[in-house]
Amino acid sequence: MLIRAGALIESTNRVHRPGHLRMEKGEIIAVGSNLEPLPGEEILSIPEITLAPGWINLHAHLELSSLSGVLRKGNTFSGWLEELLPLLPTLTPEVRRSSILTSTRHAAHSGTTSILSILTQRTALAGLTSTPTRVWWALEFSDLREKPNLTEIVDQATSWISRHPNADWHLALSPHAPYTASPSLYHELSTLASQNHLPFTTHLAESVDETEFFANQKSSLRHLLPADLDRPDLLPSQSPAEWCQKNIALPPRSILAHGNEFSLKDLPYLKERSATIVHCPTTHQWFERKPFPFNSYQTHQIPIALGTDSPASSPNLHFDLRLEARTFLQNHPSCNPKSVWEMLTTVPALALGQGKTLGVLNTDYCADWVGWRIPLGQDPFTSILQGTEPAEMTCISGKITPHEKI
Ligand SMILES: [Zn+2]
Image (cartoon, rainbow, N blue to C red; front, side, top):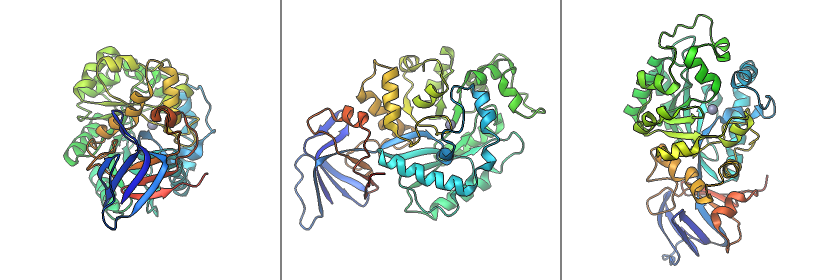
């Protein structure tokens, strides 16, 4: 199939005008400005539309969108958890499943085609047959009370995904955080992720409460954990990153959600692990945190991607990465739209091990693109990121879905 659009963003280095894209069996065969149709080839002519790579949301909780507006803004992290924890059992599998469907639909409408979503309750997936975006289901584990049977759970999830070959689903592994998952759990998941080439993600250095807990175990976070917590690994005066290093907790290419509270001495270890930090700008603002240490990460060449987190701790009700990009640009005026574009495309693609398949529109990449109606004469990166209207259409693995306005 040949698509003839007004423009095509291949990557931040190249924009084609007009923008032509040929795709076959879910993959891009060619891009350029003067592709001629082959005999009998289907043609889609959309001269007013700009094609762009679909974005990748590297940290989300799709299950939790029903909690929008429920929890108090500006709370401490422990205070927020204290409000959240009693609500989680009230979210039935049906509520969570409906949240997943609504959230992926909204995300697709706003230009996202892939999401790494933390999955806490696997029963939420029962009966789900597809989602409007690709999803990497990051199975979340903790062992505060009992040890999960990892092999059984991972085998079940793998076979569930293989029963839905057309759903564009993938697997990832996620120990929740070092205060709820023991060193042995981290280590086992890290080994499983490396052996099976699965993305590994975890919440790390998210809040002051967490770093205080690691420094002296006197943080307000301690009261939320079991009184008889048996964790000899929690030595005083260490940082969450030192804990990871000491306990060999992180595999190479770990995806670390938040990373708000690392100290400068932690950064060489993160660099050595080839870690990617996922920053969630609207959640950061929601918790009224001190500025995100973007420049320190840049100095140490540690890549930053963007995520939405969930409406339980963010005003971003629709998992719209444009809102995250705009909030980030407001808070970091030295950055430009092209560098933010990379945080939504090539950086997260590499983190997921998809650097040769996602994030760029070029030969041999997946046909995952978004069609935007923007003024053709203007800078497309700025126009798309500043827009608030839904995308005109989304294509995932060569399947085109036009969007109705919602
Ligand atoms: Zn999270």
